[in-house]
Amino acid sequence: MNPLIIYFIKVNIAIALFYLFYRLFFVGDTLWKLRRFYLLGSILVSFTYPLFSITKWMHQSVPVQDMINNYSVLLQEITITANEPSKINFSTTLYLLYALISGFLLIRLLVQLISIIRINLHGKKIWIEQTEVIEVNKEIAPFSFFNRIYMNPALHTAIEAKEILAHERTHVGQLHSFDVLIGECMTIICWINPASWLVKKEIRHNLEFLADNQVIESGIDAKSYQYHLIRLAYQSPEIKLTNNFNVSPLKKRITMMNQKKTPKTGMLKYLLILPLVSALIISSNAESMLNSAKEAVKKQQTQQTPPPPSAIKELKTQQTPPPPPPPVKEDDVVFIVVEKMPQFPGGDAELFGYLSNSIKYPLKAQESNIQGRVICQFVVNRDGSISDVKIVRGADPSLDAEAIRVIKAMPNWIPGEQRGKKVRVKYTLPLNFKLDNKEKTGNPSINPPNQPVIVVDGEVKSEGFNLSAVNPADIEKVEVIKPTEENKTFIQSNYGERAVVNGVILITTKK
Image 1 (tube, helix red, strand yellow):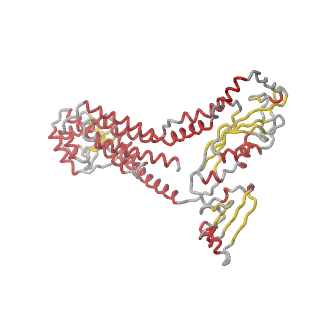
Image 2 (cartoon, rainbow, N blue to C red; image 1 turned 45 degrees about the vertical axis):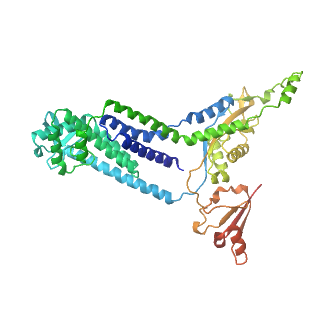
Image 3 (cartoon, rainbow, N blue to C red; image 1 turned 180 degrees about the vertical axis):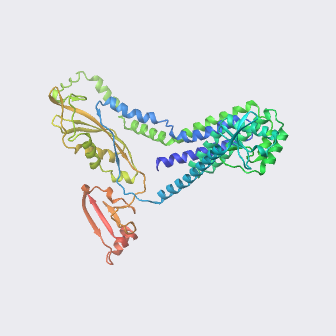
C-alpha cells in the first residue's frame, strides 16, 4: 500500500481515538485550559506520531557498520523501479475526488478570510470601554478574529457592550483564532473522518467556555450575562471562521457557567494521555519491529553450530601449530583510496545510465511485491575488469542475483593508479529496488479487454499481467495458440475460459 495512504489512515485513527478519549474522560470537567491544550495537542500528535520510527536507527546503523567492516569507496545509490505504463484507474479517481473536496473546503476558508479583510478595510475604528473596536454598520453578532473585535455598537446597551468586550477580549488575548484555524485545516485534510469535525466543534465550544468563565470572573453578574446571550441567540454569525459572542449551543454554555468547578486533583487524569500516545507509537512501528525481530531470528539460525565435543578434544590434542599464512603479494593488495581513482568509461553519469538500462526488476519480486535495498561490493582490477563481486547486505535472493548479474556484466573500467602503477580498488554500490505499488496493468500494445492469457514457463499469469516485465534477453521462445473448434476443449481445461476467447501466449525463458 502507498506509504502516504498508510500515513493518512494512521492520522485518522489517532484523531478518532483522541476524540473518544476526550468524550470518556474530559468532556464534563471545568479544566478548560487543560482541555484546550489536549485538543490542540491531540491534533499535533495525530499528524506527527506516524513519522516517529523506533527502529529507524537500527536500519540506519546496518549500512554504516557494513561500511566500517568492509572499507571501500561508496558510490551514489541508484533506485530501480519496475516499468509499468501509467493509467488512470479507480484508485486515481478516488484520489482526485478526495483532493477536489479538500480544495473546495480550502477555497471556502480563503473566502472567509477575504471577507474578514474586507470588513476590516471598510469598518471604522472606534474605542469602547478602552478597547479598540471595528464598527460594522449592519445587524451582525459581535465577533473577534486574532487581535481585532468587530461589532455594531448601536445594537447593544452600555452594559451589554461591556459584557461583549469582556468576552471577546479573552478570545483576543489568548489567541483563540489560532485554535479555530487549526481545526479548519484539520477538517480540510481529514474531511472524510467524522471525528475531525467533532474535534473542531469541541475546540469552538471550549473556547467559548474559557471566554464565558473570564467574563464571570471579571465581576459581571452571571444571570444578566446569560440573559444577554439568550437575547442574542436569534442573530446568526456573520462569518463561521471567527469567534462569535453568541455561538451555539447556549444551553451547554449556561450549564458550564453554573457547573461546580472541578478540583485541581482532576488534572491527574490528563496523565492518561501518555499511555495512549505510547500505544499509538508502538502500534505504528509494530510492522517494522516485527520485521527486525524476524531478521534477528533468521540471522541467529544461520550462525554456525558449535563443533561436537569429539572435534574439540581432537583440536586440543593437536600438537603442531598451524602453518603461517602465505605472504600477500603486492599485486593482490586492494586499495581504498588511490592517487588516481578508477573510472567507469564515460564517468559516473554513464555508470548510472548503464545500471538504469541494464537492471531489470525481477518478475517474481514484482509479483510478490518484494522491494528493498541491496548493497553490493566489488573490486576494480589492475586491467579494469570486475572481480570479487559479493552482497554486503541483501534484500531478497532474486534482487541480489539481479544486482550481481549486472555488476559482473559491467565493461572494463579505467583502472586506478598509485605512484604511477595500476592497482586494485574496492567499491561499494547501493541499489534500491522499489515498486510504485500501483495496480499492475497489461502490455500497452494489447487492448486490456481482449488481452490473451499469458503463460511464463508453464505458470498461468493473472489478468492484467505486465508483459513488459519479462526481459527480452531472457526469452528462449514464444508460442501463440489461437482458439479453434478443435483445440477449444484443451485450451479451456488448461488455461481457463478467457483463453478460449482471447487465445494464449506461451513464453519459455532460458534456463
